[in-house]
Image 1 (spheres, rainbow, N blue to C red):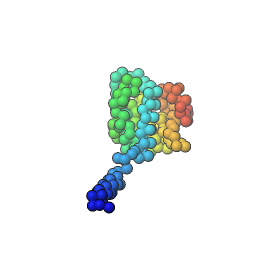
Image 2: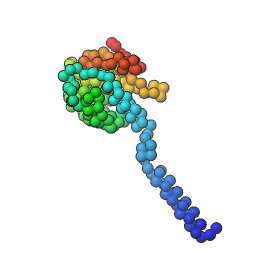
Image 3: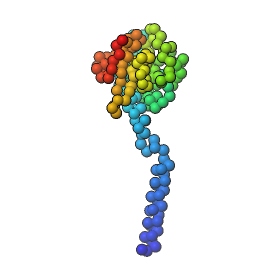
Image 4: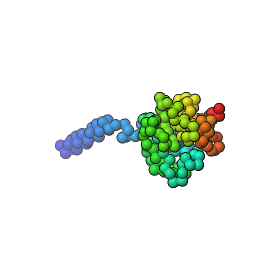
Length: 183
């Protein structure tokens, strides 16, 4: 083997090691979406699409007004929902924003975590869609509860809570729900 060929192989080997070292030091999220991130993005798309089939009472969401989606918890779903800012829901720009529960008075929808106190959010006459992906939240007044079942994202609807808040869910949406809580 001549000296020129040896130098070529050595530099090629060094380049390969540098490439591998760079890949190992690159965070996984920069290489491909992590499973949790991909799941959160799927859930965010489902939330977005369900918003298309929900009606707020007249006067609660005026024509052209932004649909305020308040993120009261900080997790992968909240981050994915932030990425939907500006998308249009029945003529309303979606406006996700991170807030505390005591700042949610102007919200049309709110993402809740498992520790969120739903009581203050369920004021009479207040059309606030409560959304969560934490287990067993329908019993706490959540109206759209996302879950993973057999590797698929499914959703349950708390119709009684929705009607109490003055929200109307399309029958098309209700047919797609895994479970609809009516009372």
